[in-house]
Length: 67
Image 1 (cartoon, rainbow, N blue to C red):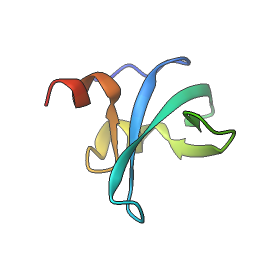
Image 2 (image 1 turned 45 degrees about the vertical axis):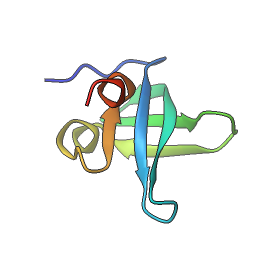
Image 3 (image 1 turned 120 degrees about the vertical axis):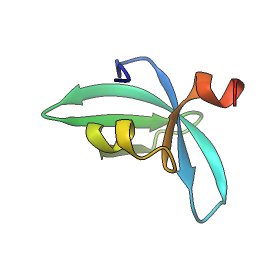
Image 4 (image 1 turned 90 degrees about the horizontal axis):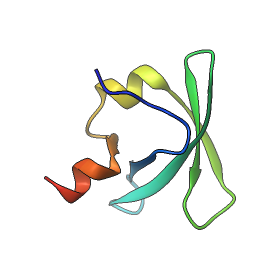
């Protein structure tokens, strides 16, 4: 199982942009993670189970470096 912790860099797939966008895990609470997109002040709240189980939408940034 993938460990998710504040400070980690993940990538979120942006369908409109058709690319992976880096985001930092800002905080975690009640089964959700708040991610902050790198370089902006935009936040998104996502389900932790989705981060672990939907590789088409979320991946650890380290996975992007080693496909």
